[in-house]
Amino acid sequence: MRSVWRTVERKHARAIALLCVADALVAMSFGAIAVGGGLQPWIPIVLSLLVFAGGAQFAAVGTVLSGGSATAAVATGLLLNARLLPFSFSVADAIKGGSPLRQAFGAQIVTDETVAMAITERDRERRAAVFWACGISLFICWNLGVAVGAAAGSWIGDTDALGLDAAFPAVLAAIVLPALNSTRLRLSAGIGSAVAVLSTPFLAAGLPVLASLTGLIALARQGKVLDRGR
Amino acid sequence: MPIAAIFALAAGTFAFRRAGPLLADHYQFSESAQAWMTSAATTLLAALIATSTLVQDGAFAGWARFAGVGLAVVLVLAKAPFPLVVIAAAGTTAVLRQFGVA
Image (cartoon, rainbow over all chains, first blue to last red):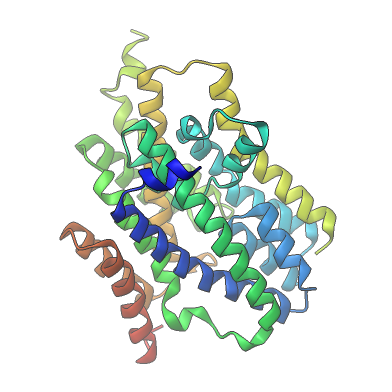
């Protein structure tokens, strides 16, 4: 594991450190909101360790706190997390190998941020290094943050006042936009984003992002995947 | 929130995360298939940027967040360093909210 930290470049290390700070603050607000809404403190803590997906955690707790059923909370969370399936494909080479426990933990740290950082790295070894370094760091910061927030309860204020809701898309934009290095990939991302936003009023949470995969037709027109069949 | 619900959400989420590497163990994916998966992940992330900027609880998320992320995109295109991009986004959104922009 030591080689992982040595392989990570300084610019990645700085990005990961900043991500940790932002995520820890959001995690604290998650713990505080859950406990402030009347849940036992262990609930947000266990939920974070086992689910480790911010969006789904907020949605599940929000559903329960607003009077929804546990089944609805689970369904909402799973729909939001369905994108982790294609994400886990894209970082499979970074997770492969090692003991079953190591592979299980590698799967657990598949998140938006770790996938974004990994797929922008072309070299296989560095890709794995940045994936693990980011994943381990975020896992620690996120879960510590939730525990602190759950203990502090309503003492922690609204993180929207700090603009942290803008930090998440900004982080992803900083990592992903430079990776849009071909016209067809830009077209795919553009079509996909438009489909996702425009379908939001009509689809359940989580599905609009999946609908963005229709943007891939921009690649298929000239891509090798379809050409092979001819 | 019952413990069974937490376990159900955790198990389902873990299955999504484990499926990719497991399938990659059993099938040899070609170079072009792997490039395809990277493109799919990139497109999903782009859509995630768009929806998390614009949408909150099924409605427009407000101009403060939009302006913060918009500035972030401009800074990214100008090749600004990562910390500046993120802090400028959060800072812009926070300041606009101080001035009453939703």
